Image (tube, rainbow over all chains, first blue to last red):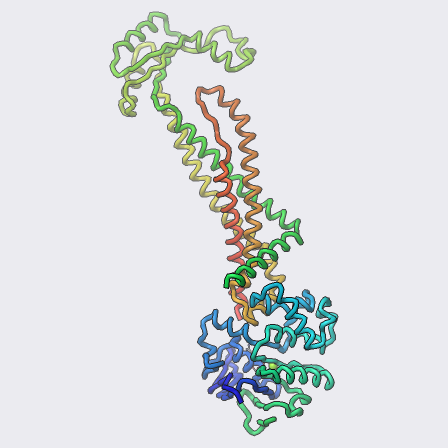
Length: 227
Length: 302
Ligand SMILES: Nc1ncnc2c1ncn2[C@@H]1O[C@H](COP(=O)(O)OP(=O)(O)OP(=O)(O)O)[C@@H](O)[C@H]1O
Ligand SMILES: [Mg+2]
């Protein structure tokens, strides 16, 4: 496949309270790949995604994205990197006092897109997740699955080349999970690299992506599987 | 890119304006607090400044006023006149008979009712003496010598009080400046607090924005506009208040000052100074916002 996009070498993460969430993690992800990050609750999936996005810094080892050491970036460059990513958070982080439309345009505003692009891009993203008709509503008026889709729309609205999704199908029924998986597949088909942290059987058993299994902060080689 | 920079600023300004318009009451309240707080020291400072200037512009021809004893006889007055003619260092002497002084006082008081009951003229004969020298030490010597003359009650250098007044005005100005500094610090906190409340309201959005790559500058910008705008409005109010107060003061002061020999006219707030005042208020608002957002970001640093 393509060039190496994410290069994780011997990464460890010890939190301030002394808890070691990751130990000696080695992982390479090529551009254009789709990867499932699996593992039990507390295995370190979210931690690893946060390290890749530069939201947390590793206590040992290095993480490179397109050759750049994420932990060594200057603050401005770190923010530029983060703006180039599509992030989906485990706890959604939707703004409940903002309309669906305003939730989706937030990354565009931060990136300084001109007014004339806002509506067009936001509607394109909402259309991809099937929420085009709901743009004037508020997140409370959306079902759980629709809220998940809104998170996806917000993550892809600025057309990132790398999407890091933390449990994007958490608490959804099988059909909804399949819908969302199909969406990620379609993004992946146009070249977007996607890393999905999940313990959702529906996703993991789809065999649509390489599975990287974490177990108590380590990569569990025995459980790896390829699409 | 310039276009993007412009977009950021336009949006931040729009955010600030919308905030002001959606909560007009609290905006008005802040404006009043800022306006009133700034107008007091600003008005006082201006008053002292122009007062000191006006006094400084008085002709610096020092005069010595020489007052004879109220019960001095005509011979004694004549003696003083002779002595004055002999004394060195005197450029010019003008005799002000007590009758003339009494007449002037009556006129000055408009209604003579007050003096009606006073049969006898309580004022002494006086001499206004122009000294040849302007040197303060020499003036003082001359005054001391003149005070010794028989029949003289009191001699004083008339410039002295003007000097004293001018320097006390300057001192008062300095004190006002120090008080103003304290009030300014207070205003920074006031604006900072209103913005702190807004930040708490928007903390989820700010946290999310930071997570997906918003710079501190991006987060700050709309609040800086809001703080500056609030300061600006308060500053305009302060300038207007000072201007109105001075206009009113000048009207009453003109009447009052007519009584004295001083020709003092206080100028109103110059447009340039009004602009300075507005600029200062804007800066204070901006500063309040800056401090508030920075401390919010530091406290919630990811
Ligand atoms: N800020 C933190 N401070 C201390 N410990 C933390 C912190 N964040 C996470 N942990 C711990 O690190 C471990 C890994 O957490 P993480 O969120 O990465 O797990 P996860 O695999 O995403 O789990 P889940 O499937 O439940 O989301 C957990 O045991 C968690 O308690
Ligand atoms: Mg997690």
